[in-house]
Length: 108
Image (cartoon, rainbow, N blue to C red; front, side, top):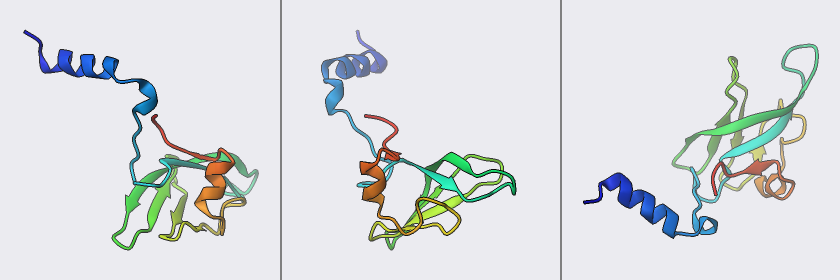
């Protein structure tokens, strides 16, 4: 008799991996890469990764870093990024970052 685990593994093996996708928030990337202007007073962070943290009823999505002093950005419902402390993301549309490879899903 197969356990639930064995059945799940058989299902995963039977489905081509190209068809498996997941999004934390529908139609938005799970992670975004931006540069912070000068968080330390010494050097900017060129590749700071932001992860989905919250989604509001009005459609805005909050992204945060996993650093000890988190940096945040908000993607408004219209897709515009609100992040005045980010050198290369503030005011841009999230689709621009997806096209540039600076926003992505964590799984496929």
